[in-house]
Amino acid sequence: MFHHVLVRRPCPAVCEGITSAPELGRPDYEKALRQHDAYIEALRRCGVEVTVLDALPEFPDSCFVEDTAVLTPNCAIISNPGAPSRQKESAYIVDAVKRFYPDSRIEYITAPGTMEGGDVMMVGNHFYIGLSARTNEEGCRQFLAALEKHGHTGSVVPLEKVLHLKTGLAYLEDNNLLVAGEFCDKEEFARFNKIEISPGESYSANCIWVNGTVLVPAGYPAAKAAIEKAGYPVIEVDTSEFRKIDGGLSCLSLRF
Ligand code: GLY
Figure 1 (cartoon, protein in one colour):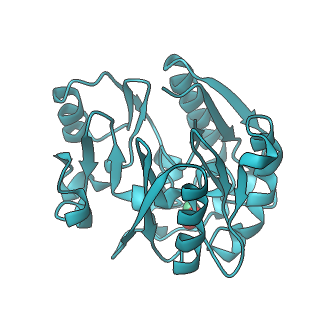
Figure 2 (spheres, rainbow, N blue to C red; figure 1 turned 90 degrees about the vertical axis):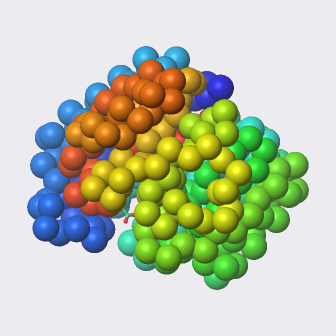
């Protein structure tokens, strides 16, 4: 069960967020705010208390608050983002994290280690971490040591194409794993019941499970049907403006 969620309001500079898909156009700021409101409302419907953090005008990607920390049942690990324009974002999550975790349970990834929370997927007591363009080997090493110190386990998954681990994966609890692209055949995930997302809907692999309900990006009917067929109630949330800057449902919150 998740009890709390942290989100951060998009700032006007969100229109300048990092993107690998400029062909999708620039985000519309007002629309992004409305979509963010709907996202918060969907989370509240799942029974969590949502803390809304102020926008950070200097950081275009700062609404993707998931990348700044990993919040586990036993500890909080503050990240050191690998994207140079995002590196200072992590300092701004610390005060919020301290409302929920004592100092003795807060760890920090430090240079030369880099790590972004989008590269981390929690499966019970175990955490998969993607070795990616944003999360380096030293970041993985520090992350695994922090997990072990606080009674969790972890393992590294080298990524091939995607930005973050959870760009192509979502754990839906009960051993059910949503998979797309390079994750469909990875040995590391062979033990799961896989729900495969077709290449045409790969963006929708970035769903989030929140207390039994799955939030799914709007506009991906085959993914929605497959998740419903697996027995989950679904809430669709439009993330079109965040998709334009490589963002999705998981990046927009920290759930714990
Ligand atoms: N625009 C999201 C990211 O690149 O971190």
